[in-house]
Amino acid sequence: MWYLASTSKLFAKYFGERMKQLCEFFYDDSSRIAKPAILEQVESLHDACAMMAEHGFVRVLHDQSARDEINELASKFSDVELVVVVGMGGSTLGLQALYQVALADPECVMREKLQFIDTVDTDKFIGQCDQLGKRMERDSASVLFVIISKSGTTVETIANLMMIESMVKNLSHTEQANFVCITGHDSPLWEYAAQHSYSRLPIPTDVGGRYSVLTAVGLFPLAVLGVDIAALHEAARSVAKVENGPVISAAIRYLEYRQSRQIHDLFLFSAYLESFGKWSRQLIAESLGKKHDCSGKEVCSGITPIVSIGTQDLHSMAQLYFAGPRDKFTTFISVEKSYRSANFSDDVWQQSPFERLGGKPYSCIMKSVEYGTKKAYTAEGMPFISFVCEQASMKHVVYLMQWMMMETVLLGTLLEVNPFDQPGVETYKRELRGRLQDV
Image 1 (cartoon, rainbow, N blue to C red):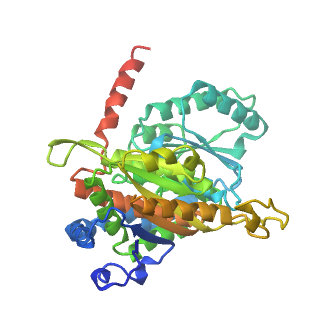
Image 2 (cartoon, rainbow, N blue to C red; image 1 turned 45 degrees about the vertical axis):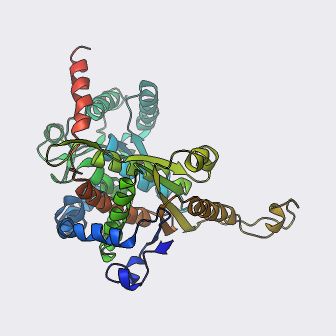
């Protein structure tokens, strides 16, 4: 196992104190991939790294005017008590990840103030509308609906918008409900919002849904609820201080992929990171799962992302991981500090291994599980990358998000696929629209 904070001569050019930022990062090289092979891939990414600052998801971190626009509109809804975000996929997954991790803090001011409508399951959607209708009968101004669709034509999102509008019209009073549409400039939804006098915020043209969490898509609802969005951008920008961090992790993951480890397991030792895992799953699947490479050659390339939660999935999936096919590469993410604390009483069960727990912090259980898992992976020759965050917080998750978005773009370069398009998704969308014509 070697830390990417190593100062060995071989890695001095790439690794050093710069690696020690919000999250500690190291690689267990149980697969015995040679360091020179990693360096060779790092060198091959030189041009891609030079272009990184030109990508929209990186450039938005420096866009003060966009932050001002978001904050100005958010200030108009300062009295709102509930923000309801309506969207699908990348329009909601990133924000859900940030909201869930914020709830780890017992003093979180956003608790029960953010709700998501991201399904067309009839029972769930109508149930949500029924509850919202009852609330809005009392005070419709206390609810803000945020409709998000980059294309402005996402069938599920627009269908939910139409149903919500009908629900609002059927309320017993006529007070205007609050709607904000976040979409591509000049999209059908952009024009629809103008016609209905809904407030609007643009999604940058060169930022796709799965990369959009640090645009108005993720930041506007948080700004309405009082979050300092400039601080989130600052946390994301700090990844750049770890100049070659995402480059090295991309090189490692690519070489592991070449070793037939085509499944990536994001193993999270915090229950508050589960939604982050779902966000990461979309990022990897849509960005790297491609039928054709950049030259048009059919390659059917891709890394299959799965998510595991410690300790639950050690009791459901570990048998497969340890005894099944060695086709997986793992990224562990854990947190160093908890917000809450409690100790075992001195009067504990006097049977091994519990007799030594008297007076010890409850958190030692999770830390021991994490330690034992990594130790077992190393003993079994199962390679992994590990991130250790100081705490479960939005700034740490934003840091990881920016790292992983950069890493994924670089993986796309190594795999010679376009990490920004998603032609496969259009297949189901065409069939869906055709079916709706026959309903």
